[in-house]
Amino acid sequence: MTNPSESPGAYEDLQEFFLTVREWMDENAVIPADIQRPAKGQPMSTELKQWAVQFRKKLGSMGWIAPDWPTEYGGGGLSKDQTAIIRREMGRRPLPTIQVSLMHTVALRMFASEEHKRTILASILRGEVSAVHAFNESKHGSDIGSNETTAIRDGDDFLISGQKDQITSLLPPDLIFCLALTNPESPPAKRYSLIAVDAKAPGVEIKAENLLVPGREYKFFFTDTQVSKTQVIGEEGQGIEIAELMLGIERGGIISIPLAVQKDVEDQEKEELGK
Image (cartoon, rainbow, N blue to C red; front, side):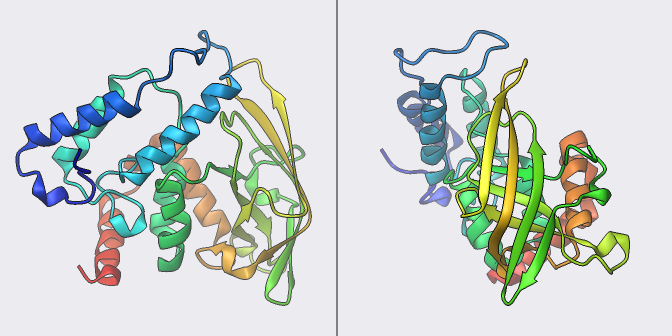
């Protein structure tokens, strides 16, 4: 079968594209009969989580997690009409979460460096990692401006120490966007940075607890976790701004971002990509 993500321009006939997508979905977007599906309100089984991760990787390899986003960032580079077909076919099937959130991917497109878009963002959109954000702390709840988790400079690295809570993550996390205090002497809005941390890095401990609702509460413990300064998303001291954008998207979707701002980002990307 032709891979439509390899030559989107070859599908001038949307009907042909639709048939190709449906065939792919029929082959790949079907949960095996021997995998138990949870009853309403029940958590996913280990087998279903494993299947969801593998399906996400397949979908990401096609560029179909973000079909109309640039291929350089892990998207499919497809048209709006082709994107609508993919999403409609996805919506026809009772699929589990693949845990790719707009609040993460849109924020990366708006604030991340070109290198991070081609690496961190692309790894998410290719389905290779499950990303979560770690903003809240038990002591301060949702008051992100009072977080006590620190990231202390150590040469070209940061040493992160503190505890974070992340609620209802259905799949085990691979990448943590950690909000940490990097500049305690700066004005409040510039004291924090958002740092991408490998969940398997030395000094990271994750404890999971079942909830009354589907999902798990993950508690993250950082003990002198060494992270390169190159893992700071955006600029150092920009963490509160990025975190507030993420939370705004979580509450109101991408429509919470003015169209003019979205267009500025897209224009800048076209310049970076030479398009």
